[in-house]
Amino acid sequence: MSINVLRFTTAGNVDDGKSTLIGRLLVETQGAFEDQIEGARRENERRGGHGIDFSLLTDGLRAEREQGITIDVAYRYFATPKRKFIIADAPGHEQYTRNLVTSASTSDLAVILIDARNGMMTQSRRHAFIAHLLGIRHFVVAINKMDLMDYRKDAYEKIQKDFVDFMNRLGGAEAYCVPISALAGDLVTEPSARMPWYTGPKLLELLESIEVDDPAYKQAFRFAVQLVSRPPASAEFPDFRGYMGRVASGSVRVGDRVVVLPSGARTTVTRIVTQDGPLEEAFARQSVTLTLADDLDISRGDLIAAEAQPPQARTELPPRRKHARTRIPCFGAANK
Amino acid sequence: MTKEWTHLRELESESIYIFRETVAQFRNPVLLYSIGKDSSVLVHLARKAFYPGPLPFPLLHVDTGYKFPEMIKFRDEFTKSIGARLIVHRNEDAIAAGAHPLKLGVARCCGQLKTAALLHALDKYQFDAAIGGARREEERSRAKERVFSLRDAFGQWDPRRQRPELWSLYSGAITEGETMRVFPLSNWTEGDIWQYILQEQIPVVPLYFAKERLVVRRNGTLIPADEAKHLKEGEQPELLSVRFRTLGCIPCTGAVGSCATTLESIVAEAGAAKTSERSTRIIDHGSNTMEDKKREGYF
Image (tube, rainbow over all chains, first blue to last red; front, side, top):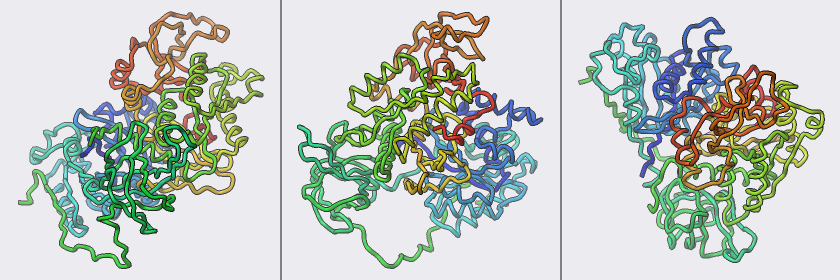
């Protein structure tokens, strides 16, 4: 069960071209409106520039536009016939690294931009590491500014190798590499005649096709109680007590045995209530209200979990799996 | 799965979660009800979130006195039909002094009739959280805002003070005098809103549907000619088939030429739109940007 929406964050060092890339993606997929593009063009000309400065589309704060840096995350939305996208454009500037944590936490995939002239920088590693730490397992490495490296294959391969080595140390992730020029438009949404040696998908094609499974559906049932519902008595609900929340993982059916933590009390789910009618079963990500067979002391913050698969209390963390290697599907480059 | 998990259901579920977090974490929340399509969706989601209970907060309408009569009629009928508590708050002093955008300029008029009135109402009723229907897609400074967005004791937004907001953990911690603005529709687009209104058959103000209306051309937009006394010299009212993409005050809300008379045709129009919906709002033009207004306390 998946919905065709990809939430991704962009990361990379300041001036590696994140905002330019996002601006181009928005403009070329009709994700930016004409009046917004026109506003960005006028603003650029007021400062003596020519044409559109794509970064003016996403840098929504005055302080950002003044300095030409991104301070906080901007969320942008666009769609292609294949997929809907929510982009969290994160700052590259070291001072605002903390804001990447916010953007990465709600993303399924990270696009790491690397300036082909500079290669992997501290900030590229830091961002890849933070995104990985927050659970992102899908990476697209866009090696940008290939126009300034004469579209040379060896320049691309060197950075690709550095990134592969770095990701292998983190483990367990999947990374794709693509050489692009966000400014000139090579391999973003359009093909490039200047990099015939690259035979893989364009950046947008990667974003449209990478499958991101939500593991929550396959895991055991977990439901954190947000609120207890005790509405005034009505004919339909004379004595209602329900537990409101969003299913965090797994699924629950009417009649399922559950355990309530931290008390450890056990009971049975009697109803799954929604305004659209009662449900027989609720799945991960659904916001519902559960009623239980017994009157128990349950309040906000308590966890309702599958009795057969209860959470385990531990005082030690299991050791990190050392052998989980990064899978790097690479396109068009040597690596054979 | 009985029903397919669509992106609309994902958005709906996320919004319901945000509503419940707000009520769980705040002592006295309020829903800012502006009568527009986003407010209609917001109220619809709030009712889903707290079913089978009643809405656990009142609706606050900040009235400027310049709202379309159709909006006020819809507001009164709709809130009555769902049994919601409605608070209408106006800056009566400014209204009595004749505040009007052509007299004060748009920025000052908005500042008095909307921002000052909102801040006054929040203070008067001691609301600690104000739930609004703003969406990140609407405007580039809104694209920067957190779901739980902190305001200082003067109701002001400081973009550099934004807090981390990880996963779906929304921090409602505030200190004396501070308040929170909460935006459950952060991730919705205009297209999502209309698709959802169609799917759920949510009532909206009839002004959203195309009809022949008297308008004048002003600053590249079509302004309703309802209030003839405020026409500028040389402006000629024309009868055109138009509809409104967003609803605000009559003097500052532009219409768009359209023949969309059904929800289906509006959904199609929203999907093909080449300009942003805020382009019809005179409030967003000029030097006083949305960021400035938000910094002053606008929602």
